[in-house]
Structure formats: structure tokens, C-alpha cells
Length: 110
Picture (cartoon, rainbow, N blue to C red):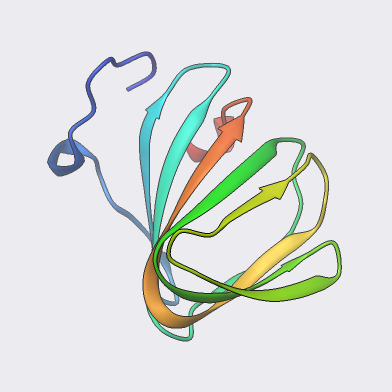
């Protein structure tokens, strides 16, 4: 769906990552990508890093995030910036949805 102008949620394949996390790759081009991640309570986004700048917007739920060794609890409306190669991860405290924006796009997601 690269360079698709209109991306309807009902048409996007859900990728079950296991352990209570489902990923949907939404609109993207080579420079930018929007990804929806649905978490069940207790699901973990393991600590990791990548060479992409990432902004995460909390659509719903409650999460404990760790970014570069600092932990904070975030809820709907909160936003986090993760610059390239900084280590980050989360634990879902209340079921919810995270919206991730990546620059450049994550080739490993498609």
C-alpha cells in the first residue's frame, strides 16, 4: 500500500505479533509511515532500538514506557519522541492503542 492516498482501516490486514499485540501498517511512503498497534492489558513491547525517528501518540489505554532508561506512565493524548537508535519499550497497563509515526518508513514492517 505504499503511496496509497486513501487507506481505510477495514482494508488493512492486522498482523498478530503474539502476546497481545496486533499491528496494522496504515498509510506510508518511503519517507514516512503510520502504524497502529493494539495492546491487550499486560502485553509488552520489548526494549529495542532502530535507526528511525519515531513519534508515538497514545490513542487509548495506559502504558508504562521506558525511553533511554527513563520510565513514565502515559495515557490517551500523550505523545513521545524517540530519536533514532534510542532504546525504548513499553508495558500495557490498561488495554489500548498506540499510533506510531516513523521517519523514514520501516521496510521491515512491509
